[in-house]
Image (cartoon, rainbow, N blue to C red; front, side, top):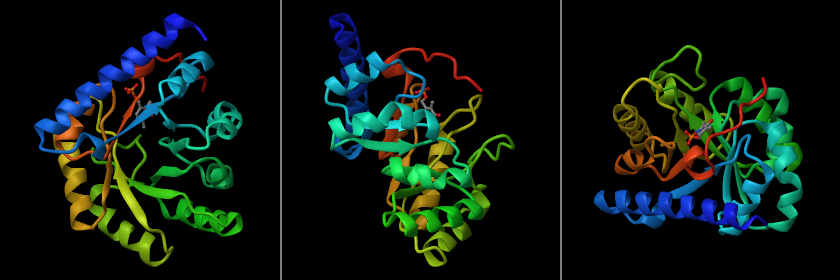
Length: 230
Ligand SMILES: *Cc1c(COP(=O)(O)O)cnc(C)c1O
């Protein structure tokens, strides 16, 4: 393994963990209550291996197929790996997603719930599930609108029998993230949902102040991403 790269990656991770821990403490929270999800999409193989060498075990990916290529073989080598799908999931990929991911953070519509329920029954296992909320009500963005979130969560629990572990949001890029984090926390609290996936490289410290239980950090850990093919 490239010594320089190993040091660079482990330094970046130590820095993110230190900042996250300091922010948690400022909020009167236990740093251990916030999971660091290393977003590895489009990152080169040697950086993934360097990150694994630091002891990092929780990783986020936004595409099923790309994640299969990157993680299927590594699963056997790292039994304590935790893989999270943080990108939109098409219903026709539900089976593959369930086979690979421990957590799916982007449940946001009934059609997908139905496909996941079928695939879970067939596979005999259900991943931990988060509902994605489109807090900024952006047309191009996935997620259930905030005003429909309560009813959707109730339906997921009631009709589909899903235990909803958490809520996830991606605030609009051009707006301050704080109000979006606060809104997600409020929706979670009134629905008795325990976990909050929010905060990325630019705002994970802020997210920790607003109650994030996991932050999804890519570029601050791995460096700038290679462009993603369409
Ligand atoms: C890519 C991605 C991230 C990580 O973004 P960075 O700004 O590089 O930290 C987080 N969440 C989601 C949903 C993503 O697609």
